[in-house]
Image (cartoon, rainbow, N blue to C red):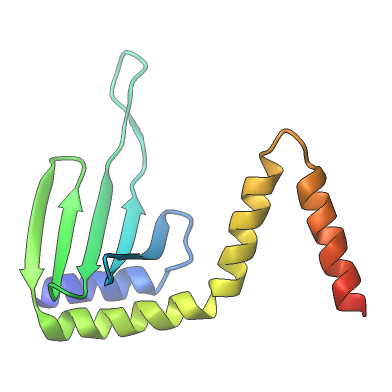
Length: 133
């Protein structure tokens, strides 16, 4: 499956781009790695925008890669244990390197969107006080 390997290599070169989202989920003891690519929106008339996403799921237990497109609702499943293992290792290393920042981003974004901003402010002050000690 040279084509999907080549495409993943191309995407990974710009993995921190705004339109690329990589995350991991564990369901029922199985690991899944999700790579979503948001494509640009287009004006299609009558004030309606059209967009499509490309989704790539690495299923560790099933040793397969699922490629899907919201544009045409097409799904392709590729069974290739070596390719899955290669990309799982690459994704896992990348995710582990940014884990601390991702946790901070989730907390900050979630707490900033609350009615009362005091939780975020209090958390940051408490964190600052603890680091100062």
